[in-house]
Image (tube, rainbow, N blue to C red):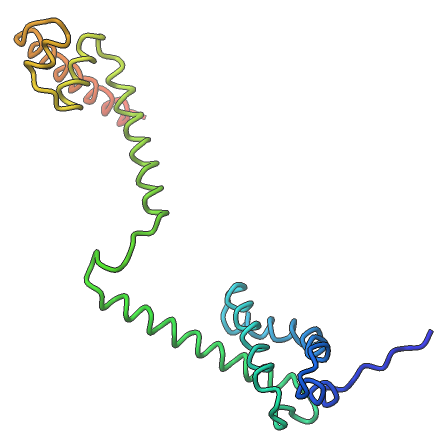
Length: 195
């Protein structure tokens, strides 16, 4: 089995200068991992290292006509310098972008992180489950009055009509429900403190 002789970087670069995409692919295969690892060490981010690697080889393709990119006949040192410069450019861009965001007035031009909304919704659901657990311990008539008047804001007269009772009876149910809820909350707090 004969070993295949690998073309030198100089040979690859000469072919790349003539827009040979296969030669460029070989150069990429030869040095992409080294450039990627270098970029990761500079950025500390795998994702950003991928972006820097892509940008580095894009610069190499765009500058393929330049003869002075090889150092001692090797392309890797020049590719690593390009990766370093690309990283600096990325950091400068990020700093400028963050500075621009800080100059915006609060609440304008910056949308809330959707994750914050999800966390808030989950917290709301947890709190509502706690409230429902307490309210479910009320007698049914009081639960209905609380749901209509206190939670949904239905006026007492209308809620009384819907429930088929007079307004005085509805107010009495609301009052009893508030008193029971206050006792349940105090008793629950005492139980929590005892644990």
